[in-house]
Length: 412
Image (tube, rainbow, N blue to C red; front, side, top):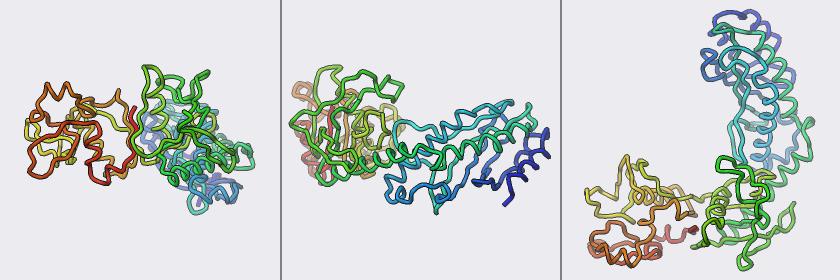
């Protein structure tokens, strides 16, 4: 493996040459505290930036081995390191000058959720952080001096400040690990107690705006109805009290602008853990949960929606239903079937985004539209039975296959 000094020599030798000469930098280069690997070099300064990654032995980075003992804590650590490296990159982004994307230094942008990301992995005792760099240029000729500044000056500072335990705020890292363990405890409690979701009292559910995932300031904090309240003892946060939603059918009702959709959106986001300060740290949901909705115009391929829809006017086979332009009803029916096949154990449904005629057909509509003229059903028919029974919002649920009828469902 070549050294960082050899990389600098190579950069000087290709300075001012045609941009494709940058491809000679591809490969692994040993720096004093990490290995830099240039995986892919962009074709010109206006193309997608180059892909690089650094490798650091986990022991050399100094993090406790206990952080890797559980999947939840390892994921939280990787997420935290990605955020730290992102903050460091922001200090140097576009500080090196040139044309096109010259000087760009970036890594995956993290939101409020704690996710497994390929941007930072820990494999075989090695921390691997992947990121992008815009190799600098004068027009379409190499500006090696600016790339030398990025790789030899900026990058080592970023790596040492974000991926070495000794240089991080140890209390904050420990808080990340403890929160992950508490959140995992809630998930295990749900599984052990036949619950679909948990929403802690004091949670901040509203978001800052429709385009921001940050918590809304001065919002009304969540308070559970006493009849649904439970207390969970967590290893680090102690007793946490909140609303426990049982498996089965749960209805969330209320007037307009009373927070029904806000609560459901918080529950659906609870399939992921959230960072400290998000307000939804202890809004935890069964990880298989799926938000069902009507999606007019979506494509469907070979979905068996005969449980819900039969006898279409164009005589399409609903056991192998295929379309490139599904209606609201057929798209929602397909979503139900696809979710079951994917292993979903919890459905979340918001009336505002659902196909109303798929969900219910009231007594008046049953009178206006003959049963024989209505292809949408909410109950199964026996083979050879051509009659239709009254559509009831619960009938199809009761008579569905066993694997379906045991699913919990939350309506809003």
